[in-house]
Length: 146
Image 1 (cartoon, helix red, strand yellow):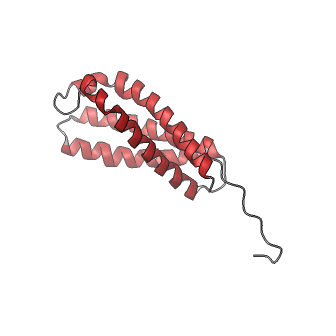
Image 2 (tube, rainbow, N blue to C red):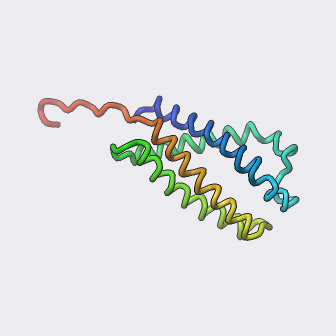
Image 3 (cartoon, helix red, strand yellow):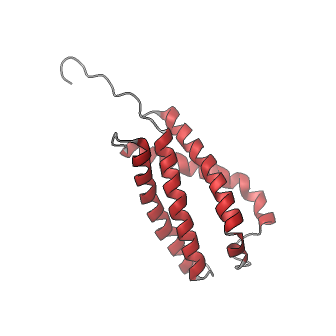
């Protein structure tokens, strides 16, 4: 496993996710969050939590990059990353948007918006991880055939 590229893939995905998160959740869906006062922090109140959020995103994406590297099958990094990202996207959309709909006081429209945003987000992140991660060179085989 190429740990340097693994870390680089996670950092690249964190940067992409930060940009995506700002544009989609912070701008495009800002009014959707505002429809549920008391459920989500306001932008001003949430700003104090951003350092912790970014640290958690990096840790999560380190784990995601590691899982990708363990399952890497040797094909095109971008294609494998997109497939991997889509599987993660389905997991996140179902597990988190579905659970949030059941446990938070949000409407179906908002849950579907969050699911759609997650599908795009995690497919994108998997593609970034796949594009950046490159495995270490395969270990040389010994002459004895081992």
